[in-house]
Image (cartoon, rainbow, N blue to C red; front, side, top):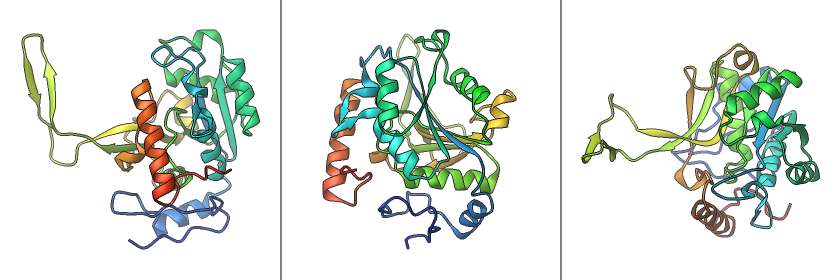
Length: 258
């Protein structure tokens, strides 16, 4: 597949990843939509709670030479998002976020528990920071690229619908019903995918009005090797190994020298 033409004012990556059939290429219509709406007020929100349970301090663990959260901040900035904001209850996370060029929004304690939901954190942020478009980036998805973020924003500008990044899922799913395993069959024809947690883009007004990014979303398909969502130590090691291999053997996902 030919590499898409990218607007000069968007070509701030220092590289453009090679695209293939599993990548969502920015076509002329999407680029035109971004050109029409390129001055829209967008906020990249990175929620980073200090009290990770399964992998302590995971958001700031060293990942290929930088704190884990730094890679999400850098990819958002390279994508040209107007404001990059980290919502956190942790002083150490806040210091690192500011070091890498993000704004920091102090998260209230009631939204920083293990049972706090992301949508409440997002609405808290949007109540303080005016924006037309929300770009939600989890710090536990360091393998997403600035190009992925650009593509999702452009798709949202064209469609007006939420964009959710996904990757292909195995059709071999089973339900453990207590007495054994029962195969779960997809209810409709088509590819089976799962959200990978890397990028969510939607209208800020819709979020504040009670909706979320799963209200008739458009999927943005990402390859498995960029879809690791770090929750455990095993996830962390896998993502770091994938990053090192892809940064050394292929065109880099991110510039590790920056």
